[in-house]
Image 1 (tube, one colour):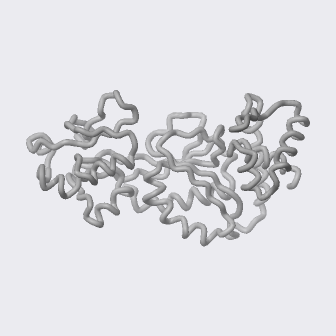
Image 2 (cartoon, rainbow, N blue to C red):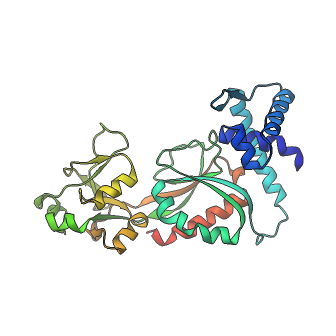
Image 3 (tube, rainbow, N blue to C red):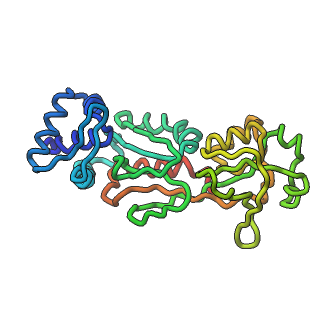
Amino acid sequence: MKNLEPLVIFARVAELKSFTQAAESLGIQKGRVSMVVRELEHEIGASLLHRTTRTVQLTEDGRAFYSRARDLLSEADALRSMFTDPGMPLRGRLRVDMPAVLAQSVIIPALPQLLDAHPELEIELSSTDRRVDLVQEGFDCVVRLGPVVDDTLIARPLGQLRMINAASPAYLARFGVPETIEDLLSQKHRMVHYMRNFGAKPEGWEYPSGDGYKTILLPGAVRVNSVPAYHDAGLAGLGLIQGGYSSLVTHIERGALTEVLPDLRPEPLSAAFVVAHRRNLSPRVRAFMEWTEGVLKPYFD
């Protein structure tokens, strides 16, 4: 399907915001990339990119064109593999985003298994704590923790990730090991506060109560706005923390953290595999989704 080459080149420039990086990733000359995009713009009669000496940005027409181009390329990919043996190795590039701690603690350590089975598959893995724009930033799929509130996206639930309470041995030696919610107050425990936006009210310590969950506000001298920093603060003995078992288990196994209040764990965190459109479910995306679900399964409640 060589006639789709201009769309492939344009899409790569739009995603990487660079003619040079697009050329390098595709293994072609930068001059060819520039020429193909200029010819594409001339053919459709619209300017698709704002070019400056420092960056490349999509125009309004370019954003609309890119969205349709991505759908078309995804359809072409599915069509191309229509009669391919399902057991055949995957090939090509897959652009994924997921929370940093999930990538670092679970997904990246397991990636050799996936790439050994599919040596021609290329993974571009973005790991951030922000909500990326799948369409504008060119992601094939994302893994999200917590509710998916954008009803324009297609989300497939993966499961409920187990959450635990933890603290460092040094912290527990100083304040004692709590066994009840009342102990948190009587032993004068403190917690590390995780806040997406400084200045907002702290969310407090979550615990099960009846058929639901409640929170109590514990004091804490440290507030952080990233999950890795939150975990590091717990490791440093700055307070109690509540986090995903998948990201804390290695610290617990080596003795750097201890689980506390195991019968009063916070509410499990929903995990979902998200795409911008059902037509984005190419064989690569489907295979990665199934593989991710299998990798995360031991950490689900």
